[in-house]
Image (tube, rainbow over all chains, first blue to last red; front, top):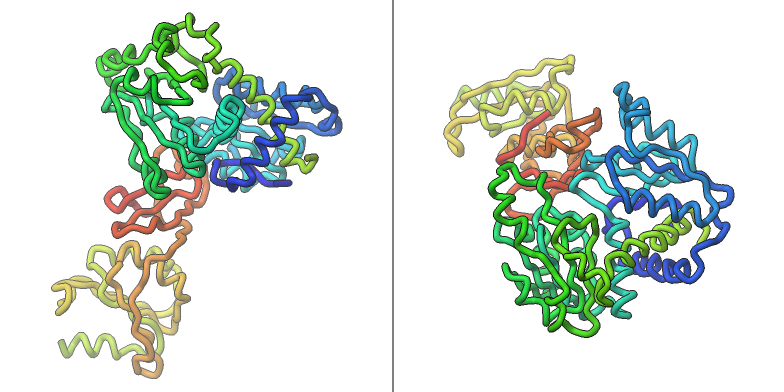
Length: 302
Length: 151
C-alpha cells in the first residue's frame, strides 16, 4: 500500500482492508511509538470536524510525527481565491502525506491526481469517507471477533448518510445480513442496494426500530441531518422517530453493541452511555488506531 | 436520392459521417474539433433519409479519424455511420460505439462536483446498462442521458 492514496473505500481490496485492521490491532496494544519521527503530515480541513481531524492529529502525534495544516480556511490563501490545485501542489511540497476534508465532491480524487505525495480522503462532501468505514469495520471486528455472517442494523438517515453507504458496500464482502430502519423518505438508495444484490445477500427494511432490536449483533445508529431537508415540516416529522434509550436494550442479544459515527443529537439517549452495549465512544477512539495503521502503511513504514 | 449519392461520392479522400440527427450536427463538429480544421468540410442538415426520415451529414476532406476519437460522437449521434473514402471509393463503413471511458465532452450533472467548481477535465466511465449512464471519475455520481449536457 506504500504511496497509495485512499480516496474511496473500494480503492483498497478486501485483503488490503483486512491488513489495515490487523495493523490497527497492533497500534491498539501500543499506540505510542516513534515511527513518524522524521515525517510531516498535513491536515487540510476545509470544513468543520471534531473526531476526524483530532483523531488523525492524535494518530500522528502519538507516533512522533509533526503536523501542519488548517482547520478552517479563513486564515489561508483559499480565502483569496486560490484554487484547490495550487493549494495541494504547494502543501505537497511541505509534507509527506496530505489528509484532506473538503465539502466539494470529487475534490479528494482530484487532489490525489495533482499531489506528488499520497492523499487520504477525510470526507469529500456527500461522497466518500473511507477512514470512517475502516474504523467502523475495526469496531465491529473488535466487538464480535469476526466480520463474517453478522446481522447488522442501520437506523436513521440511510438516504444521505455516506458512512452507511460505504460501510454497507464494504460489508458486502463478509456475508452479512442487513436490517435497514428508516422513514420511507430516507430509505437506502438503490445504487447501494445493487451491491447487496450482486453478492446475493439478504436485506430487510423496517420503519420501526423495535422490530430489529432482538435480531442484531450491531445496531448502527445515525443522525437525521436537518440540513438535508428543504422543508422544515418534513424534518419535524422524522427528527424524533428513532430515540434509543436504555430500557430498549433489555431484549437485545448479549453480544449486541450500539455504534454511531457521531455527533449524536437525540437519537441515543445519554442513559445508554453507561451500558456495556454502548460502544460509540470506543468507536471514536478506534479511529486513532486505524488511522495510525493507515498512515504508516501508506508511508511504507509498516 | 441521386443527389445524395453525388454528395457522398464527391469526396475523393476523407471521411463521411452519415446518419447524424440533424439537430446534433454542430455538436459533432465541436466534439471532433472540426472548427479548427484547415481543409474543406461540407455538411448537410435536414436531408432525407430512408432509415431515419431526416438526417445530417458531414464530409471531411483528407481526414481519417482514430477510432477512439470517432467514438466520442456516439454520445450525441449514437446512430452515426462512418464511411472512409479513398479514391472516390468506399473503403470501410462502420457504426460508432459509445466508449467505455470518456474524457471531456460531457458535463457532470452534480453541481457540487469538483469538475463544476474548479477547472478540471471531466472523466467518466460507462456504467454497463441498457440506458446510457456515465459514472463521474471524481464525485462518483451517475449522469443519465436525460441530465446530460455537453461542454
